[in-house]
Every structure is written in structure tokens, then in C-alpha cells.
Image (cartoon, rainbow, N blue to C red; front, top):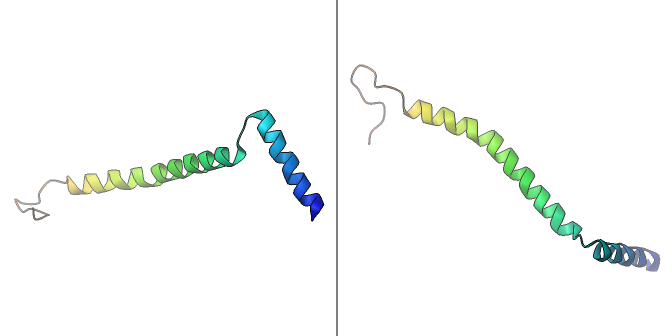
Length: 66
């Protein structure tokens, strides 16, 4: 148990020396990946929804009530 704790301390020392906070970097990376996936999935769906809503009226009747 003591050996594991010392290993963790050594890693934190190396991070401080390098000036990189790996936890913040991993959170930023996961946020970027989540945003990319969300945009990739939702943008085409939003485009389909907009096209559907903008369809011309059939025979003078409205498709949607406003």
C-alpha cells in the first residue's frame, strides 16, 4: 500500500515538473469528443426536421397549425 502511494506522489511530481495537469487535459478532451459526437449526430437530424417543416402546402392546406 505504501509503495502505491509513493508511486502516485512521483507521478504528481512529474506532472508538476512538466507543467501539465493531466486531469484537466482529460476533461477537456472528453468534452471535445462529446461535442463532436453531439454535433455529428444532431446536425443531420436538425436538417431533416427543418426540411420537413418547410415543405410546401399540399393543395392549399396547411400541414401545421400556427
